[in-house]
Amino acid sequence: MIKLNAINKSYSIGKNSLHVLKGVNLDIKDGEFVSIMGSSGSGKSTLLNILGILDEYDSGEYYLGGTLIKNLNQSKAAEYRNRFIGFVFQSFNLLSFKNAVENVALPLYYQGIKRKERNRIAMEYLDRVGLTDWAHHMPSELSGGQKQRVAIARALITNPKIILADEPTGALDSVTSQEVMQLFKQVHAKGMTLIVVTHENEIANMTERIIRIKDGVIDTPSEKTNMLTGTEA
Amino acid sequence: MDKWQEIFDTISKNKLRTFLTGFSVAWGIFMLIILLGSGTGLQNGAENQFRIAAVNSIFITGGATSMPYNGMPVGRRIELENEDYALLRASYPQIEWMSSRFFIRGSINISYKNKFGDFEVRSVHPEHYLIENAIIHEGRFINQTDLEEYKKVAVIGTAVQESIFGDEDPMGKYIKVNGIAFLVVGIFEDEEGGYENRMVYLPITTAQRAFNGKGKIRQILLTHNSSSVEQSVMLTANLRNYLARRHNYDPSDLRAIRISNNLEDYKRFSDLMGNIRLFIWIIGIGTIIAGIVGVSNIMMIVVKERTKEIGIRKALGATPYNIVGLIMLESIFITSIAGYIGLVLGVGLLELVGGAIPRTEFFENPEVNLAVAISATMLLVTAGAIAGLFPASKAASIPPVVALRDE
Image (cartoon, rainbow over all chains, first blue to last red; front, side, top):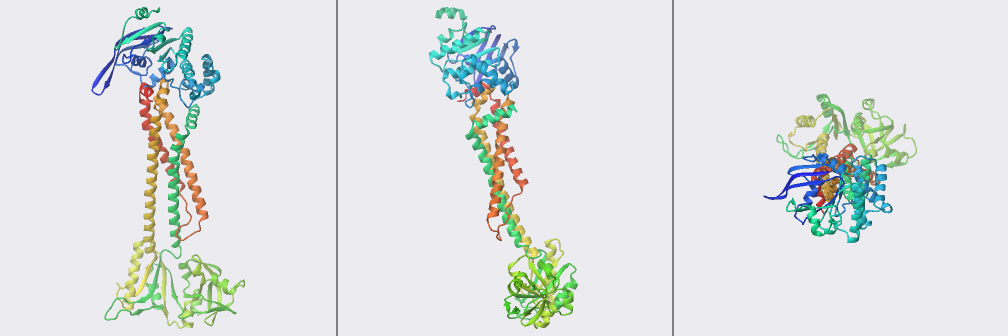
């Protein structure tokens, strides 16, 4: 599903150049549920942004579902983001002036689907995350866990190739975090490819595979890491 | 359609932002309309003052010398005579209409039966009413036959009719002017109203004979067919030279015979009005610029404030075109509606004020050229759109990851 070949990425800060990703190779298969771990400054956010076509890379190759993602113009990038990728963010990133169902339906607006139709589909997905009764509440009226479930419904609605979750439990308490992870597991059970970026071992351990990134390269084989933390691959 | 739905949604859920953007546009247009309307009112009022007499008219009045000439002293009286009238008429083909005025010396008593009043008497030529813009209500004005046959006829103003005839029909009745009976042959009303309607007109020949005129006249009025101010100034100078030679005084002595040129005055006046109009336009353009700056400012803040939203939308699949379109259409929609509201309020207030305040010499009929008002509104709307375009396209091109990071 995802194949990265020698991805390099630098940021220029003033006169200095900061080499963030130093030849990242990565292979994620269809239907995998993986986590990416790394300390801050390790390059994991940058990697996620490249995977999400939110940011560009300098050299290397990135294949998403067989499509080379390279040097896209903005409109093409937007289209791929819309069709291939579902995002879940730490801070939820719901539009505050839209209610739950409208937030969930928004990606379909950019596919040109009629309002009635997309709201109907959005209700189905809200039902899947158990928020039918909250469909017409504004984000400010929802708890953190509810907001994240709305965001997950929004990520799922376009039936993307992958779900990218950036610290999805970072703003949630442990009980709610568990609920969100359970939801991810359910989604995974239906065959979706999921990538979760986290710095919490507990969360990473709920995934099938842990990818560790350190100083801009993939650190060690994930099996070894898992053995060290005493969980199975 | 779905696009508009999305825009209405965003607008109606961000009321303060909508209001602030709209208010600055509505206020700008409103002020512009009030300003332009008041300017027009001022202009209308002042122009009305010049409707009194034909604009292309010249008044020549006898006076006294203020400079010595050929050994003759200062203060010598110069009087116009019948001969001046005849000579001028014959010498200047530019003259269109012409009349002398002769005034009776001393007090004047005008009566009908036992009623009398204090009115003015002007003895004139037939063309006088063409110069003074008098409207004949009934009968006729003085005519050439009256002059030739020294007929004792009179044309009276409406004020005279009201005060000494009351409900009685004056036509065919005799009024007495200082004891001499004149047959009323016409009633007139002057556009200027007031004083001019308290006038009794007599044939100049009859009056000069009856009231000891000796061929002297007080004033000559004429209109001319000069199309430009330059021509009329030249005519004035020619008349002055001609009269100076005939009456033996210094041509540069402006007080021996006073010649006033209405067109020259009108020109001076319309120059003044032009300046006032220019001034109003400058302030109006200033108002528009202030509005444009206001709208630009708000649009910039709006886009800044929405950076995060733009980031989210981009992450969900909005193209830069979608983003710019959303912001632009929103801006155009709000400014158009607000501009229209300002337009309606401004025009409404002008109508209200125009109807409520009494007509004065200085202010009348404040109104605004709708085409100008609408162009101004469209200018503001366009400016708002352009003001939104730059920050919007900048925001739309920010990588989504940067936009998402914005707190």
